[in-house]
Length: 221
Image (tube, rainbow, N blue to C red):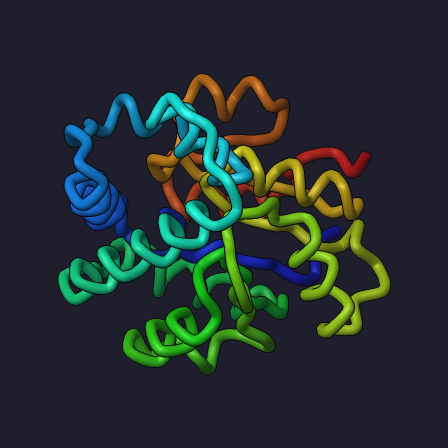
């Protein structure tokens, strides 16, 4: 039984894949590198994100350079964010969770202040018991911020929580804390990589909610 849903933001509720790629290519140009394409991004993307950049740039990245790259990407993304919209089913999916009597919250690896601003811009504040992004330098795994998020919510039964996200790291974080997971094919990874993890994969946000409603979420490990 699931009584709380934790949503991911980028690539899940927010349809920002095009903006992410454009921001990444803006950053690559600033670094004097050639732009990349969606297929390459999806094949290489992983957390910690520093490792993604090491694979993309084919060189190691030290702490000082990583700080510049991380800030550089988010500055480039801020330029693109004005044209970003919610996924078409996002509001309906949030409404269905509420109608089922489940509480919900939002957890993202995006910078916290930016996340809060975006949620307010899309008038979604009222849906969530709590909204958390990353404070400080980002790019790490989601597990530690998920643990902090659950503690702040006062959750005692993580086996009654499901995390809906579009990244392999979402499934890993959920498994680490004893929660369920549903992965949404939102574009961060090839769908065959999502399916290989062994958790349910949804082709739409409403399908993800159907999986929650029917109890067909990932087994708690």
